[in-house]
Length: 54
Image (cartoon, rainbow, N blue to C red; front, side):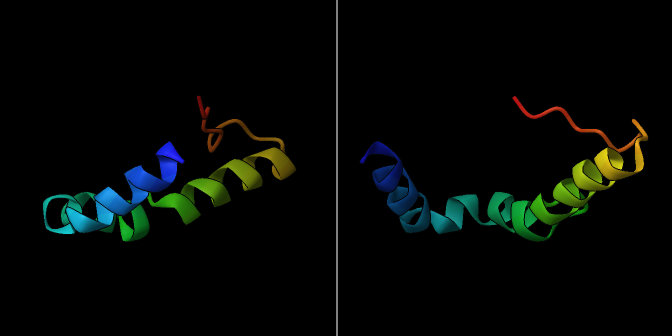
């Protein structure tokens, strides 16, 4: 329930976080691109695109 309340509060404060949320969704290294790098590095066996998620 805490995460739902946090998500709701983030969208209520969207004007404050607008730049951050925009970069997270469509920035130079957004969620999709980091996923592609991680997956492609795994399947090709290279380490250059390997991103460690903590």
